[in-house]
Length: 152
Image (cartoon, rainbow, N blue to C red; front, side, top):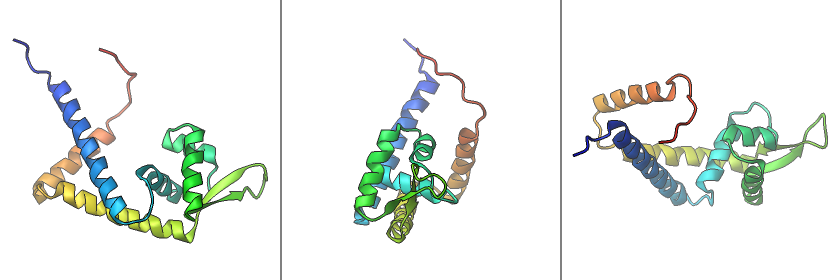
């Protein structure tokens, strides 16, 4: 008889929970009727953190994706009027991406959808459990250095 692997069980629970969070957030975002995918909503949230419009390469780095993925996301958001490409004022060969008023409105609605999703996910927890979960998540998020990946 083998003994259970607690870390393996926790890893599986975390993966299942992450998938559930993504599913519920996607449903709430779709219910808003914004025509924005979860990946596009992530790009909108990322754009909002910049003080001035970033370059596509900056977005790709921050999102940890290849530049081509950002181009596809920006194309879709630009077609819906949520972002626009603007030339860099100091180097016209560089294109920057900025939120439009429509994009800021969509971002606000996405944030509301995410809050509603979080409320749904956290509904079974008491206030005390939510506080404990918040502390545990802070510990995991801020948990020190990221060691190299191990196989096996």
